[in-house]
Image 1 (cartoon, rainbow, N blue to C red):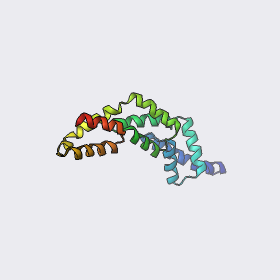
Image 2 (cartoon, helix red, strand yellow):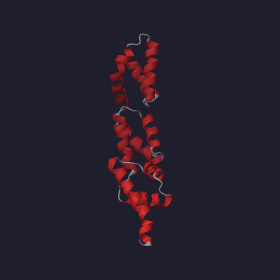
Image 3 (cartoon, rainbow, N blue to C red):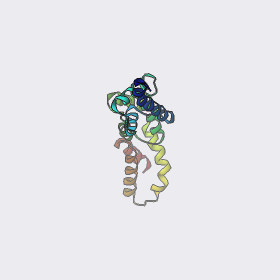
Image 4 (cartoon, rainbow, N blue to C red):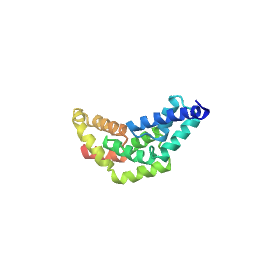
Length: 159
C-alpha cells in the first residue's frame, strides 16, 4: 500500500457510511456529522464527507426541512412542536424559520388540530366536569404544539 491509499481510506469508509445512512432516509448535515462522529471519524474526514455530500446533493437541509415539516404536520403536530423538532435536527435560524413560515400558508393549523381533536373527542367526552374536560383538551393540544389561539378557538368550538 502506498501513502495516498492509507490517507484516503478513512475518507472512503466515512463516505460509504454516509451513503449507507442517506440511502435509508434523508439526514441533515448536523445529523450526519453526529452519526459519523459517533462512529469515530475525525473532524477533517467528516468535513470532507459533508462537503462532498452537499456537492452531490445527497444532503440538502432545506429539502429535508420542507419534507420533515410536511411529515410532522400530517402526523398532527402544530408549528410550535414542529419548530422544536427542526431544532433537534440542527435546522434552526432565519433560513429555516422562513421555510416554516412558507409552509404555514400551505398548512392549516386549525384544521390539523380539529382533526386530531375529533379523533380523541370520545375519550374527552367521558369527563363529566366541563372545566376538567377543557383542561384535558388544552393539555392534549398544547403537547402537540398548537398555539394558545388555536387551542382556545377549538375549545370554544367543541364545548
